[in-house]
Length: 111
Image 1: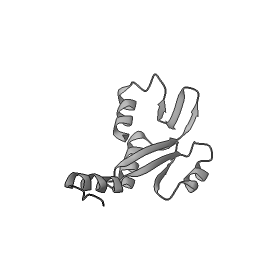
Image 2: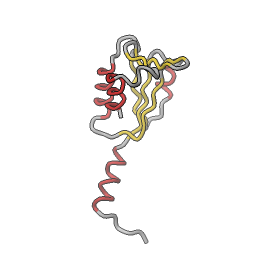
Image 3: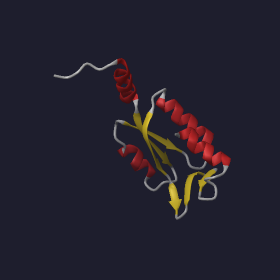
């Protein structure tokens, strides 16, 4: 016999059912189109153009696709090399840039 769920348990279950996994795929990533096509149906895959996407436009795209839902996780497929992540042409992450206010704010906003 199962116990009836209380209001807080039902609310948590409702939020969990609206939570999704997000996959950001840069056009600069190797095999980006294939990754986008191969994403599972329960994953919100967001393909973005490496050269023209800004941090602000990427955040807007995520917000629009989520449409009020919460994220369980966010995966990011980008071009990289040792010590560098090329999120976009205007957003390059390294150990030096990670502590700058703009880059730090991007990751906080994304989370």
